[in-house]
Length: 108
Image (tube, rainbow, N blue to C red):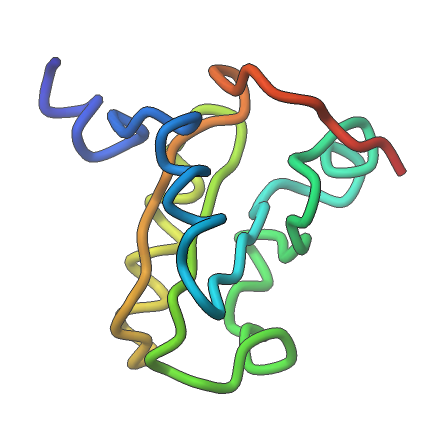
């Protein structure tokens, strides 16, 4: 695995989703655009475009809450994690890209 994979989505999204399901209070955030989200997203995910990540307080107030981000490939979710950390969120993780997700997707 190369350095870019480690920075941008080297995490196995399918294994990470098991962690999300087993973590009390976990929030799963899809940082893709609204159109991408509507076309298909992981069930239970909340959509907050990476370009609007500064609005995270409307979704998660607790800066210690476990937050997991994903996008298409893991790059935008990596940027979102950096922005969240800069905003004081302490428990954030990039779980990669939906392009490697093997489970059911919700449309709408």
